[in-house]
Length: 290
Ligand SMILES: NC(=O)C1=CN([C@@H]2O[C@H](COP(=O)(O)OP(=O)(O)OC[C@H]3O[C@@H](n4cnc5c(N)ncnc54)[C@H](O)[C@@H]3O)[C@@H](O)[C@H]2O)C=CC1
Ligand SMILES: C=CC1=C(C)/C(=C/c2[nH]c(/C=C3N=C(/C=C4\NC(=O)C(C)=C4C=C)C(C)=C\3CCC(=O)O)c(CCC(=O)O)c2C)NC1=O
Image (cartoon, rainbow, N blue to C red; front, side, top):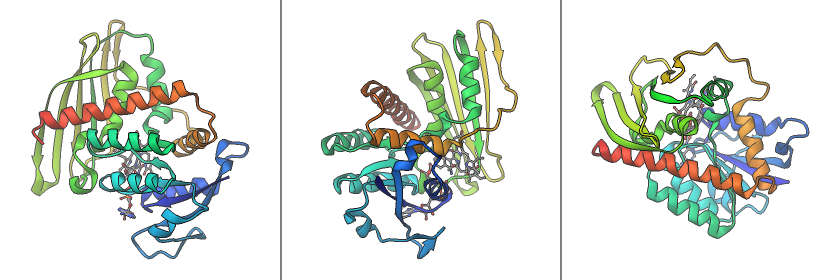
């Protein structure tokens, strides 16, 4: 059994607590036991789970692992503290808000011999699995991925290429390693509006454009337009509903890592993808002059 605590009780943290309390039968998650949670607010109990303070969580002998579900801005500090305390870490994406910090934290995890797992539920949804299947085997000519959503506080969430890392992860998982050729950002701070446009190319020099646009009243939505030598892909039928939700799939993967059931090769491939996406996010930020 691995004792787990959850830090940060927002949308993601609440889902994590729900899933930790209800592991799928005969799944790796049955090896996780929720010990408590940490919040800045005084909640006392949440779903009958006990609140504990951060210091207690760091020192607690029964805590083997932490789920970090705080704002992006806090991830780095939390990962560092829990790794230093000898705990395994699951962190919601993005892992941290600069490439240097991400590299350092990965080294720390290796030095401590602890699992550092970055959630990437965007790859685990039925919507994405369907898209991946459609793209497989096709030869790209060019493509656009456009995301819209409500405003985010950059202080708490980081530069949009980091808070929007899920879109980069899609592009990299679909088309392989990419390079950034240019990027710019249009910002209207008083109106909480921002539009990031990044131009990338594939290893075969095929152009991809990523647009991340956020503003008041904008619906959370993704649109894509991919031209292949065989035709255009710009829509998919609604995906079937998932038997297992993406956060639960991710939790199972983390439990498998704790149990040593994930191969070195798979771990290395995943780490390489995460580092590459963070590297692209960093390059995009630099192009935008931030
Ligand atoms: N909501 C979702 O569907 C998904 C969220 N994520 C990631 O999960 C993380 C959290 O996102 P949400 O839950 O949506 O945001 P949220 O704003 O609902 O929750 C964040 C929570 O963390 C708390 N918090 C911040 N700093 C803290 C600290 N130092 N100590 C304790 N608590 C602290 C806040 O008070 C808040 O309750 C972000 O990194 C986000 O990128 C990733 C994938 C999906
Ligand atoms: C309703 C308001 C709502 C909010 C505030 C919300 C926040 C939110 N959803 C995210 C991703 C995500 N959120 C979800 C799914 C959900 N997340 C949910 O809160 C719910 C209810 C679902 C399921 C329907 C998925 C699958 C991702 C991964 C990225 C993606 O595919 O969009 C992220 C991480 C950053 C990002 O990729 O943009 C945030 C902050 N999502 C929402 O839907």
